[in-house]
Image 1 (cartoon, rainbow, N blue to C red):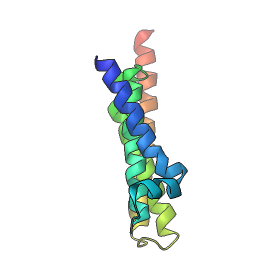
Image 2: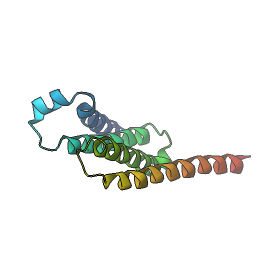
Image 3: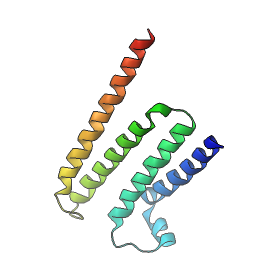
Image 4: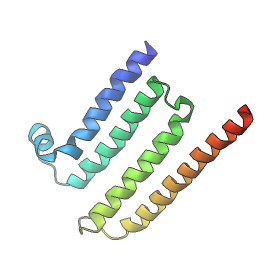
Length: 125
């Protein structure tokens, strides 16, 4: 039951999150007009990250690393949104500072992820 629920919710969230990223006009046609499209993109990225994490946990792909995967993808996605919309003058340039912090977090999570992989390989030998 647990795996089925993780798969079902993971697919639902992944599809819900990716839809506005792939085709905003159809998303807006179904859900109605939005004043702040950049927020729709931001939520889409976060919902997609949660969905991917649930699917990874369901299929036991780095299951023990689900929190790290979620943290990495959220930081990467939020940083990308900050850069995209700040450089297009949709949001204030101060968001570029947030982007720098988000990208730093993503890099640190990558370092942690790959260093823990090396540590666990050394322990096995």
